Length: 591
Image (cartoon, rainbow, N blue to C red; front, side, top):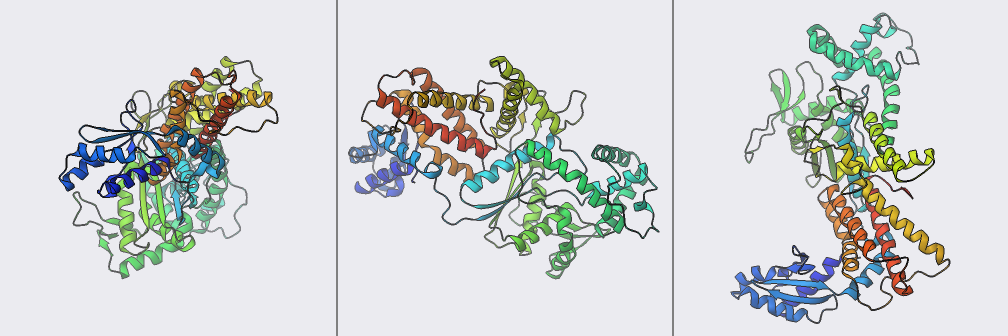
């Protein structure tokens, strides 16, 4: 169904046209002075320049023309030429009733669905997830859900890091620990063991130890680099170890992503595109795009319009090894072959912007993607501690994601126990749901590109602009509805627009916010901006709270008015449920 602001704008455009002005001046926006009006149009100022007429005269004429509108109840022309409007309340109630009767509350799906790849997560295998992986997972999951809700075919790919130097480091670290394993015997020709030579716990110790050693020991670092290259070239023993690493590491990654309610449609990694790399590099050379520079193979991507230097993109190292850019380009080739996407969205630290600029330019120059294919890099800022520096554990180490979730669960569990007497099992289940909302909302409520402070105490609060507050509001609505329906078993629901009556200011504020749902979701999709949904759910929850405190819903003696209120808050609950699902969390039935 059409957005409310579109319907109002249609009337305003018709009014401009009826007054002899181009309808393009009838652009309507939400009022920046809600104390004066709900919607406004500033088109008279722009029209005045073209028609050589005082803007206030144009505004007055348009306002007069709008006086008979069925959608606008009050319209005023204000100096120097603003057109201020208030929506017809009866029309608003009809609009909300129509929303409540439609799937997805009337949100219009894409008429021409796109195939969209969302590349997020990006963990390196053999390493546990830590808090540095949080933002990519949380933002990417929400972006995927928003795109899918908008009606597109969306493929979420974890894009595992399973080909780079960490493979060589793990293999050489294992050699240091157990040199007599058959994988390190060059004369061994038999089948390698089916069982891995390490546990998950041991694997998670091997990588950091090997990484630290490589920084102190140049010979070890060189060995790890050589082993990485040999692995990439198909060394039998190293490929067998790689399979063990994947079999041990990936299930743990899945388990931790599950705790975040983050799922991927595709679990592919850099290794999956290794077969594409040789032909791809040769093709770049054949096209005259790639050339040798200091022993490496590079593609120049600098353009005349650039205001800063964009270095060449290295697609093959001097030793023949692949880099991130190489595998990212090969991944595009594979995705084009398998899915032919219309749009790519990459989630990564904003400090990787240059890398993606280079990769996107090579992909376009080489014709790997169609000219109309959209390549989007959504760079995010860092999650910092209260000191403004990257979040650390108390002893200064990098906190594991599992530990962050456990700490948040513990903080929320204390609050749940304080709120009510409740069985321990239920308390823990509720705490898990609320803690996830605290983490995700705390992250997503910030614009992705901005750094933010992770404040556990504030994020876990049941008051203010937090995930738990949103859930608490939803639980309150559920409680009201349960009480109402318990006392009105079998009673037919009352429409939101059942009678013509006066509406209270809090009621209108809630109705107007509910009516903005479709507009908010559309903008969140178009701008790849989950924080806009967070802003909306907070405003909607806050508007409900004001309405609730000023109106005794269950005690209301007018049964028709009470029924209208029940239908309205039922719609509000639906909107909140859709929104938090798009953000990647859910609400319990009680808190």
